[in-house]
Length: 437
Ligand SMILES: NC(=O)N[C@@H](CC(=O)O)C(=O)O
Ligand SMILES: [Zn+2]
Ligand SMILES: [Zn+2]
View (cartoon, rainbow, N blue to C red):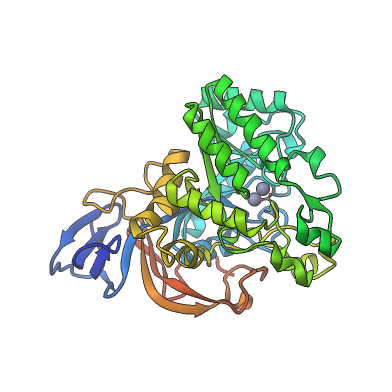
């Protein structure tokens, strides 16, 4: 195996003395002092931390259908710059990714671009309509080898449909991820969290129970089906408690939290700026605290971005008309540093766990989220823990600019990302095999 990249003087997981790490085109070739490698790219790791490449279980790339807001090219660039070596692209595209034609395209296009492994998520039901199961087996058997299924954007609300989906997923060895929102409880109310802020601002609120009732229901359905279930974008203290309870019952449940639900609360809505509209909505400070604790304790398994690009015209409008969703790929690490590392809730080993190891395990990716050891895959991210940077939407690689962190100065920066021994991002620039913005 040819040596490709030599990282000098870096601390693995931010622990111990600095070492050199030599990466080949598949694997980590050597870890030690004063390594040499002719022809290899050199990355200076001084003062930096090496982690396994991040894995995002929840990304929206808008191809096919809304290539004016994001494409597999530009979303891959955002992912590489954010330290990701694998992302899961949600199925709510146009056409919906409910057939192998679409899921295979997403995988192939991602490989052509070559910046990150773009794993397609397959729809659970045809057209995300909730009426007929999609051909999960065909998608799983296709080139895209779909491992994760979700109607995200919509809830698989019919309990019988969800039960069938869980039964199929168990026999196929794949995972269903649920957007937990009981639609009868959010009729005309998908705008804000139901609470004092929404009441004062005159916004229709979606109650915590809309999320929590589905989390509880799906935990029970998973139990009876002998299946696993994954909860997308957990947003309430009650969801954390329910996931914890389900585990004590031996139910195979996993859950993710988004960076924005770890940082922001519904006080942001005061300005009526559509940038803050997201599903599930930004909740109260007590929910934010419970989500942080849940992530620190391992009740919430991982961080997933729910990167959701939207065009200016779909965001800069009346609050209730604004499309829900926020950019997340390029800022995720910094938000995790701000909300979890700086307050002492997670150390860097913990960051590796929630941003790389757990997501890879949950979805069954054996080439990601692996230990930084000789013989393991050469998928890594080099992080500068001390640098602060100021977020500016137009500077991000995404076509859309809808970051809720505009002009915020955040800690922690990705210095370089390496996918199978090839540098995909370095000092804010990307190195695709093809394509680009
Ligand atoms: N999170 C959002 O507010 N929006 C997502 C859909 C979703 O994740 O439910 C989108 O596709 O824009
Ligand atoms: Zn969702
Ligand atoms: Zn989503």
